[in-house]
Length: 236
Image (cartoon, one colour):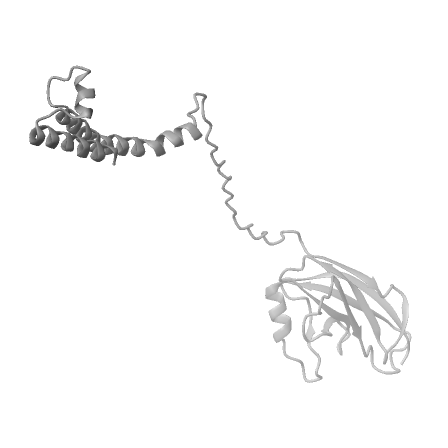
């Protein structure tokens, strides 16, 4: 705006100079400082210079102002900078625990009752009990080791299926024992037998004789007597 006003004033002076031909009061002042060309021309040039150059300079200044303000607000640092880096977490690779191998310890079967010499009733029979560990495929069977019709000692199978072991314990009621009143006062031997898988199948599938008894003259292969207890029949 200043440049345009100055240029307008210069144009006015030129007009006065060329139209009137006499020296105005303003021209007299300007001529006093030794201008060699019409003063109106000088004022016009100055006004045009201000009008053209002034906006360019102002634009450059304004364009540079944000970066200069940012620079003044955040002066550059000359010291070393540190950038935090995340520490990598260790990678955990899990593997399933292998199944423990089957126990290779041999079966352990113990007999707690009856005690040898226990007096029993033939009709009530007797309770045989004990413990078992590490059986695996082995099973427990109870036999009466008694005389047959020919007077020979044979094994009479008492249980039809293997004894159940619960929490390491087993038990079985062996009854009846003997033949009524005819054998009161006799001793009876009870065999506790461990049977392998193969012997278990033989015992399970054995057929009874005409009297209904499953009898073995000797224990089948794969069966072994763990213990034998002897009781005395005192009542029918």
